[in-house]
Image (cartoon, rainbow, N blue to C red):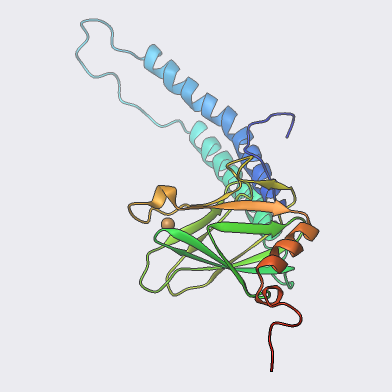
Length: 235
Ligand SMILES: [Cu+2]
């Protein structure tokens, strides 16, 4: 955005929503942060103790015009960012929730691996997530009952949701750029909830491919494709 390459690779429609929100909030925070630091710095210099001075300075009194001014504008700004990009951004991220997705992937996080199941095709993988580009993917995320809380986070997608034992959480992602872990480490599922000794290495490789390549990948792994169509199953 604006020619600034300050974000990691963005590879989903949701990533654009999140990055826009992040950029806007940073832009708003810069002048406020600068102002506050300047006032603190000026105050420390202007009202510093003179050498040999040991008594307290004069008592600090409120400023009857400045206080309401500051209170009003900071409150207004806070409410404004809750509405946009807060509420409007959430609506955008949840845009696909009421529709059927193109692909469902069941995700299980456990100490310390990620399991992926493609229920429509009877395919399962361990630490390997392959997705077709430009399709709405619905992740149903969970963890085994006797495990701990994990968090399903893909940096390149900017989407994250907890994997909670005994609960199914849901998040929709529409990957919109081809890419894979071997070329960019942001194409990975990284556990984002401290979950024990190997939390830091609890990641899975993500690969976003063209639809045809995805179909082929599924066919090679699905139970149907593994059974030869004729000859080997007599009587
Ligand atoms: Cu974990």
